Image 1 (tube, rainbow, N blue to C red):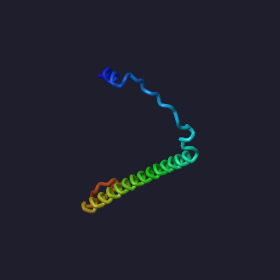
Image 2 (cartoon, rainbow, N blue to C red; image 1 turned 30 degrees about the horizontal axis):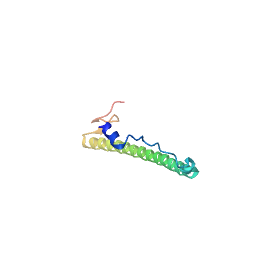
Image 3 (cartoon, rainbow, N blue to C red; image 1 turned 60 degrees about the vertical axis):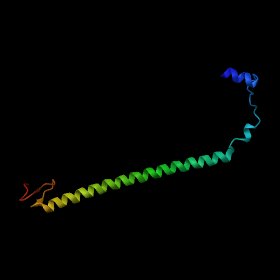
Image 4 (tube, rainbow, N blue to C red; image 1 turned 135 degrees about the vertical axis):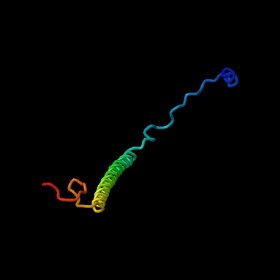
Length: 97
């Protein structure tokens, strides 16, 4: 198939592209660098803020779970028949000291 394509196109070589644009004219320059640096700084600050917010939300959830556990223990102690012991068990009578 390739041979047929070469015969039909006249066995011409593929032309090599010539550089026609000045390399200094297509670079971003100092303004492009400044904009890119500002975007990078903004991304870093946003990531740090997001991490802080996620950490704060996790701590709030842990505190809420601890408070819920304390409330559940207090309800179990109130539903029990006696005084709640310091170790969390509900037994009637006087605690040994």
